Amino acid sequence: MTQLKRLSLTSAVWLIGLSLYAQQQTENNYRFSFGPGKPAAGYRKVADTDIYSEEKGYGYDLGTTPAPRKPFYFSVTVPEGNYNVTLTLGSTTDSAFTTVKAESRRLLLENVVTRPNGFTAKSFTLNVRRPEIAGGTRVSLKTRELTKLDWDRKLTFEFNGPAPAVRAITITPNPTAVTVFLAGNSTVVDQDEEPWASWGQMIPRFFKPGVAIANHAESGLTLGSFLGSKRLEKVLSVMKKGDYLFIEFGHNDQKDKGVNDGAFKSYTERLKLFIRETKAKGGIPVVVTSTSRRRFDSSTRKTINTLGDFPEAARRVAMEEKVALIDLNVMTTALYDALGVEPSKKAFVHYPANTWPGQDKVLEDNTHFNAYGAYELAKCIVEGIKQNKLGISKYLLNDTPAFNPAKPDSADTWYLPASPRSNAIKPDGN
Image (cartoon, rainbow, N blue to C red; front, side):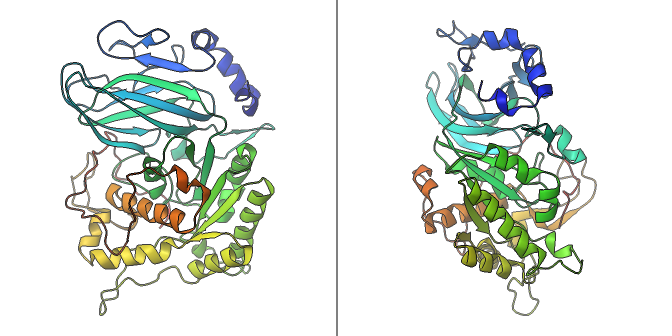
């Protein structure tokens, strides 16, 4: 019942309509079995014809069902909160190569390989959220967010890769997990559709169970509009002692031109407010400087600063408030310089016309990242977590070696299967 208390009366009434489904679960533990044979005790057998509906509360989703070598989605209705998830991956008959994402393309597992009749169990912790805020208010969502998987009433898994296969799913509430909240703009948000991507949706892949990433960033936002749309209020309403808030803004804030705006005025004041409110809740604020844009000096062929005083203002606030700083601005500058003028396009949304469905024009965006660029930025954030000796460092996966942005992964050999859904429309912000 602790999860229901966080929901508005409207949400609670909606959930009561699913009482029959809920009664079939054990203490909000959700267990599903796939493939041939009788399911283990306590598991619900899922047939290929089980399509998701609100009434049923689970099933294959977004117009997909399991098919050989095809990605598919599976959704489960769950209340707001953090959940430990264990996936048993593999097939009784074939080798499987499975990459798993959740909600709005949060990367969780990369290319898990299993042989015929060989299975492996992988676990992680996921955050599920709602726009409702305790007290009767709610987050003011943008129109594009109304259809995002991050804000709906279900937990959605994407099984992707050359030959994806899942044998079982177990979902168990974990109210004691450390939640890492993310506040930011289009360089942080979980981008719902290809080819757009941000570091916030890649970083879950690097954590063991026990840490849940709750990405509340949204494209086009400033510190002020994050506040105004009640997103900080939402974060604080569910934050507990020991949780984190990573804060990255600047790209859109620099466009505010009021008399009291600017890096060392409203931006600094609001950043301090975020820090103060987080500390008051017992949380741990972390300041992240803005990612550099891809712009090179024509003579030196080095990245130039297009963000004015905003990165420096963030550094000063972190120092004055005595909180951790991850200098993503410096790290991304080193990353782009290492890649070079032309190769650095491979980290951004630079694609010829007709690369993606419905994309009839060239895409040339020097602010927004593709999956490869977002993945490299997530590695920068992980390195910043280590350098700051943050408590969540102990939850980083053992296969997370030190990362030097001046020596990035090769874009030509890096691979992540693209999600089925794409959109050529540029996200808000620049």
